Image 1: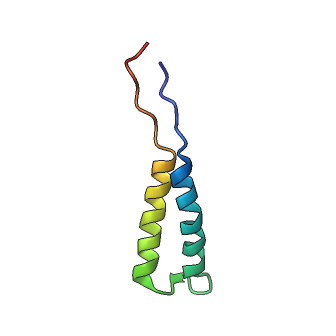
Image 2 (image 1 turned 60 degrees about the vertical axis):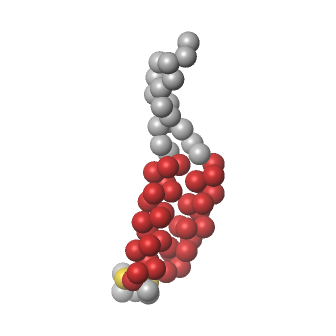
Amino acid sequence: MKNKIGFNMGFALMAFPLGLALLREFDFQTFTFRKTALGILYLTVFIVAIYLTFKKKEKSDEQ
């Protein structure tokens, strides 16, 4: 049985506004975050949400 890559719509819907907030918080003129702690928090949660969105499904032993 193949391991299939899953797609979790809940985490995808959570990652979209986090990505937009992350872009809004990032200053492209100086390549820094406007508020450093908030930017790091957004980035961390965004990466976790993307990971959980595309997490592989576990194998089931059922036939």
